[in-house]
Length: 115
Length: 113
Image (spheres, rainbow over the protein chains, first blue to last red):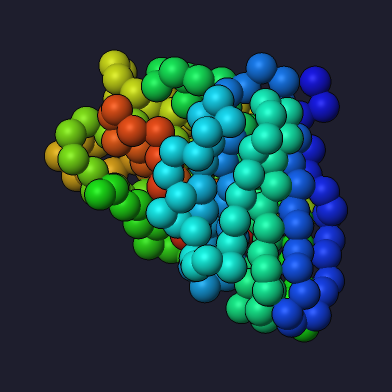
């Protein structure tokens, strides 16, 4: 298995532009998580899905952020409009269901820089 | 609500010496506890977990962690450090019945030759 695949690896954009981050979870995994990592705040959970349905989006900073999971093999995190304070590394992670299996598999992340 | 504290931003240790990376937690009920490691420009990788049972948990790469309920701690340990262990280590906690995993701020481990 190729693991969790995120694209792009790096994104540089200007303030006000729309940014779309993409994630392909491990095949067969039914949970998908979006995290954001910054020096100031560490690793924050933004939103997670179970069987393509958003379960908890309480970590999404504001309405500028949105996430979708149209099918089991693809998810997007969109920021519109982007701001410099959105600069961070965004990670996608997936796991195989149940409350007993605890292992999260992370992608390599997308380094976002908003100028 | 649950939370995790990693009191040390950085831990320095010489190769061959034992290492400890500290973690304390706060959660209602019995906690599910985890350690993850992050190498440069990579995502986090699972190291080990405590769900129930023996308080001493063994994981990948020779790491182990000890669950101490009275001190609400879950310190990561290794008897003999390697230079290749240098990385960022994250402790995490989850409440039973909930899927949300909350991470600490991370501790950078530097192992010198």
